[in-house]
Length: 384
Image (cartoon, rainbow, N blue to C red):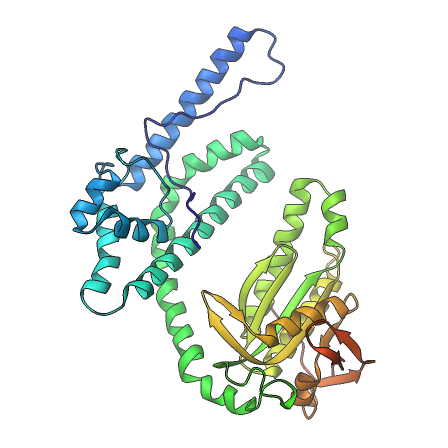
């Protein structure tokens, strides 16, 4: 479900909590510094708010629903799906642009293109993805100000707010272009090229019918940083953040270079997929090798499984995903493990070497016969 507390620019009337500097000898001095900081933040956020909104916040929740010609309950479904925060009924928080965005979602239902549930689902995809995107962007700016400019965290966050008005227009243009390109790519891999993969995994996992009804055939892989829990206890916050960021960035580059897709990151772990077992194997081996060769990163355990999956809400589901996840915990640092079905799919390809491992009992799957995947005659995958 969409969270009700998403980031939004602060209304002019909203109080900004500010604490007096620690250790201030004179309370009056502390209050003056606190007031100055409060004023600076308020001014910066008002400037940003005015720059981002072409029109003022003129409508309450009830007035927005009236403009849309629907009940407050129906309107709430739309703005919650889009990630707007929960506010009091009488508070003026919506602009005419917001009303137009709500109207666009509503028109998909009114024009008969979509039913209500599907329209809300599409709206939720926009709300959740843009929420994650803007948080990522702000934190990247903050980190840069700390690392490159030597600012404290509060100073860096203030600087990030002041930088954003100049970044909005180019980022918006990039987002529009990339959205259309990604949509084109997704249409190809989720529709046009599906049949070939299904034919290659007709019966499902290990000759059974367990996942045969699922609509997509994919190579599913996980890469998991070794000793992440220990690192999180011994590293400082920023060092840990830089380590995780380096791991995710390097993984994303390798996955993209191999023609795969980064499905999601889960702290110290990345989940990816590819259209063929060969592409998945190439990516998996490159991930294991790259992490092992990077002296700033711990080694990674990597796994790969080929089979049927269900793609929903930007994620993938099914026994193949679960098995790949289980195999990750069985792999040694710097190695790649695959299951028997994946090994069979790769066995005639001279680019790969498969070394059978002792049978293991895997929760939810019983006895599994994994194989160690190694490079054979394969050319190494070069990421940009």
